[in-house]
Image 1 (cartoon, one colour):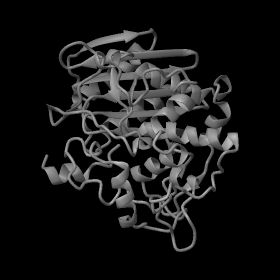
Image 2 (tube, rainbow, N blue to C red):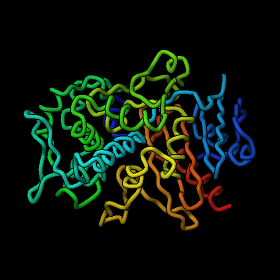
Image 3 (cartoon, rainbow, N blue to C red):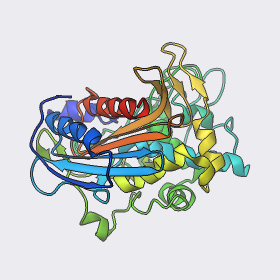
Image 4 (cartoon, rainbow, N blue to C red):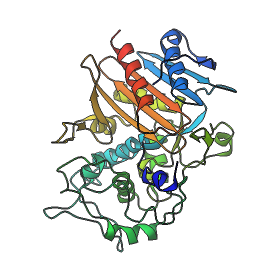
Length: 359
């Protein structure tokens, strides 16, 4: 992939032939339902993949690989933009604590010129629903960027320089424009220069997500899958400024299933009120009808069921998580390869969720 094209995709989040692959699994009962989706993920180009399911009181994890050991529930992948829902949960906690409101205007320390619309300022709700009008990336993010690690060089000083050069595409609150910049600024608005610690303290810690972090511990590094693009190994993304967008977050299938179980059953979670707030409807795009909670997107399966979901991607990993509270079912997937935008891997998650939720 050429350097210019690669940098231009920095905002990122099936075949049916069965391939032989080595498989590991935990749990029972769901193996026959999940196995075809593992095969299809490998057929779609994944070097390895892991799927996880929550169904009623059961959790199930299975992995497959083209070569070598198959991943399992403790294998570490980069999570990508699913991490935005963690930042949205931190916002919801702050709302219930009374420290901010959803209609609180975006505010950063002096020196950071926040773009604003002609009629009103950007609010925290706008950021959490991708309706701020901010573009996906700061205007100067790609200046001098490593094409395989485009956020690594970016500093707070760069952000202060780039914000005045970043125009809005529409008035805040009027339309949907997916924005990594918006969620990065949401994290900075909640905990300036301390986003990662805020997420550990306020979200991943209380939910017991010990392997969901931007800091790759030595024991996690030894369990981490290697990311790939076009069949070649690529470095993990690093991001010290816009990490509220999930750009440099790591996680495991076990952790994502714990997180999804909390989404299915907020009443059992220490973050009940915050989780419920993130899952409420907060914005509808007038052009497409797309509905959003805080961070979460709402979609419709083939049988008409409404599902809540988010996907994620870096240049080495692709992920997707979706759940249906009505049936008590959730499905997640991680693969260690970049997705080219065809959403073939996401489609597997929705298909499996539809199959399980409807049976």
